[in-house]
Image (cartoon, rainbow, N blue to C red):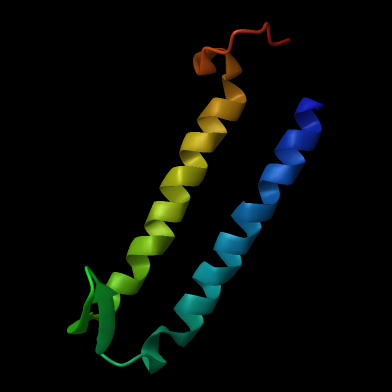
Length: 83
């Protein structure tokens, strides 16, 4: 695939996460201060609404890591030559 096509295709998840971030900013005041958290099989745990930002931050970190790999494909250690 062409490098420009890969970069253009990469803009799709960035756009989705950015739209979700703006939507979350818009609705953040309407979210209750304590929200249910379902982790480790427990159904009765509650946490603060600030925890909603954890998946957003993880998404941005993963996207930055993928961007570094797109910009430097020689770091992938593939058995074929990359132009």
